[in-house]
Length: 424
Length: 180
Image 1 (tube, each protein chain N blue to C red):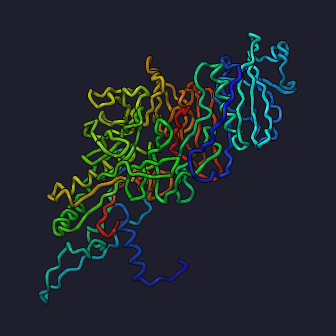
Image 2: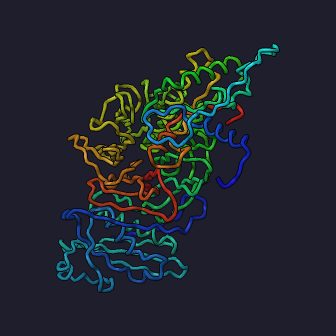
């Protein structure tokens, strides 16, 4: 079955992309017995594109921790003939990908891929995409998504984007980049700190906190237009935005009535309603994907711990974390099975996950200044900020801790990452 | 000493250092700032000729190192918003200043050290600013004269990464209108 797609090339942010290149270091630990061995050949004609499509697909699949790359060199050119099943079996591949890039008369390219099941000797399945040369990376991410979905049975998150804050000297910038760190674009700049970017569920807006007015005020940035609107500017601090799954409301933190408490607000800044009433700190709200729960950080029991309340605020808070005396910045996985948060262990702040069913916890990193965990929309990976050599870097780890990689950018301090939604 | 500064300048510098230095930092190991020993005596009325009485809450004393009104920073223990007793004399003076100057407005900015999450620290900084405000308002200052905000860990006064830097950054600062 072949389908023809035209990739819409709306980059979203109406600003010129910087040509900064992210450097990727992938570190895979563990035996990897569960990884699907896959061979991905060089695509015919791909050297005419600014980016080799097959390289990006390989990097995507290897990084997600569910695939093991099998050497695909000396691959015969893609043709209608079936692959040499026996030799692929000998190489240990369960799946095989071939592909081609063909220049069209108008300068665009047709990029196609074929996916074979070596075990069942079945296939190919595949698609053709018509692209302008500059969107070769995006086409590769979409092909990686298709391969992932076919073999894993759930959506891939390779064509998603991330937001984060970059500090250069005394300048702050809200950045938007591809999920693999490439194509970073400056969405907005500020001479004062920016924190807590949060994607709207449809990926069109980012709420964030700005200190431009010498105090924390909540804003919403619209990616397509660059328009900025004030979401909340009440007396005291305005912070910690989290979008409800319907995109119409947000949970935020205000101090207008006393200590930091959770409030609900409409996306246009109207309809403020208080959700929690504790005498201490309630902050860092995050919705469950089904919209039922708000997970948040509170010091109501002494030190900061993770709690949850029904998202409408009607109901008692349930405490989620019991190990250690400092647990903050929680995010619940899209399937509600895993709670990710930062725990302090002997003075080290580390990304930790808790299995919601068994309450078992696992520290996923060996770094000391982890912050801001954020799940990939398919829940397989967690993006977080940490520090290496006193410089803020962004890292990604699989929820089992076995695969880690770092998105690093030269000479800039990056933090406060947020993984954007799947946008179909 | 490379440069020979006039004595007056040196004195002014040391006084400036004192005014920004913590009067007390519980739990702090390293203190680089000079101790507040060289504070000039407060101007005293001379006995022989009766002079108009000095108003100690005149705005000119806000930055006078000899006045407690120049003490603008309250330092906190790790993850704590408890205002130590040592700060009460200065906070009492600020309270009296606000009562004596009804149009004066005060902004209290809470800060934290760099450890932990941005948002939790933002909330902790707010709690510190609120604790200082509470101490001042307990002495009878109208609520509307004081606003509290938090800068969390985003605007560290000391950019270092050691205990001395952290202690300096766990702080609430008092500012008056015209200063922010």
